[in-house]
Image (cartoon, rainbow, N blue to C red; front, side, top):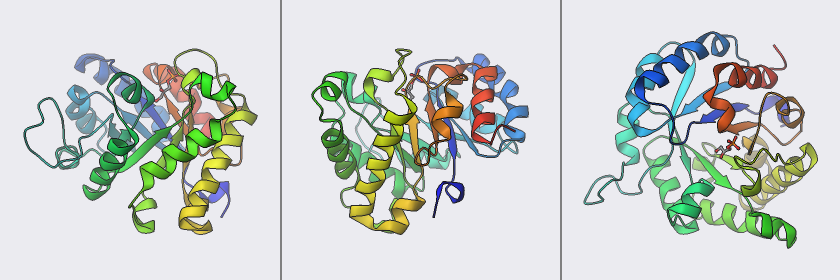
Length: 257
Ligand code: 13P
């Protein structure tokens, strides 16, 4: 299988942005672009916007994701939301192990793995984030870090379930900084991640897996990144908060439609 046969997924990660009225406005603005998209379009939104997003995207082709989920179905976990709760309300995707969760909320490879399994069990498609810090890149251990994070996240997950996983390569130094990895840097690590997946599950699963790039992807750099053989879409923060910018990225992923 090659890039043309893999699913390209452009996912917005709104992070902690947009009240419900703001969310509604942005979704309305996105509808037209998404209607003509030649790729899967996903918006991952704060919990408080999920109901609005699920309801307003019905029939539009835009899919809705959450930004995290807990690994238990229910119980005494104040402040947490389970994968089952998300699936029940019509959510289809969930971001797992974003570097902001790892950095600020003590997320570990172990909890990333447990949350990924919970998401799969609930029928959600996890977007599992991996990526090195600046110091790690400078120490030339990017591949070691990314391999560890990827294999840890996939521990105990069957090949069949792995078919529903998206991996997002997000170098931490490129997130929200305006510093994008070059097309070549991003391609090199995404290709390496595909090798790690191949070592675990074999060529077919690895070749079929959607691997995204994330980190300051914007209307100017998206086309170059998305043209790379091993980059099957993007996980977009800042630029997904603006319909026109996100729309340009969707068009770039749709072959410049
Ligand atoms: P930015 O696009 O704002 O750099 O954020 C990337 C990201 O963290 C997406 O998950």
